[in-house]
Length: 168
Image (cartoon, rainbow, N blue to C red; front, side, top):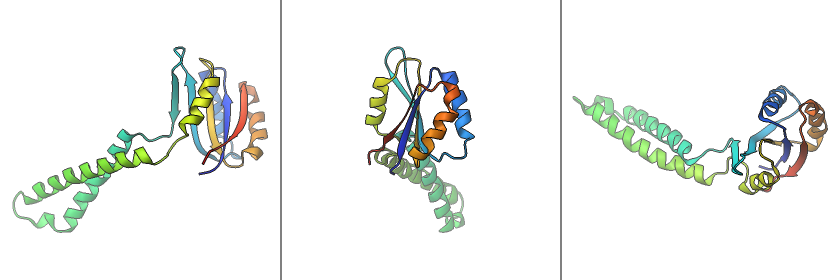
């Protein structure tokens, strides 16, 4: 996905929260992705974004795999087995489908890019000061949106608002 990134640094978390409330009500901005980057007093960088980790991918994949396997076995006639056969067949199918789905979900989450690049976050975190979080927005047409966004965020004392290009 190609787009432009707008970065805004705020004086505190409280101000950032109020600014986020304002941004969500704006109708002229089309946000593709977003993240919040903050630097702790210890120098550690904290990122809150929309990136999906391997654990989340595994949970989603396992759940979907188990459900699809159970429904598929039921459709193929597993419920017509005598005695406890349907319970054993559906249980074993859910286990195998869940395991395969979990592996597939973890694999997909590791290799599909959902969030911002680590280089972009690292470059920004070097410029941040502790206690001053940054909001990163990937938007369409940032050069049209930027003047209006600067005006709308002027009351929130955003210290830096600048566009950057996304590396493909």
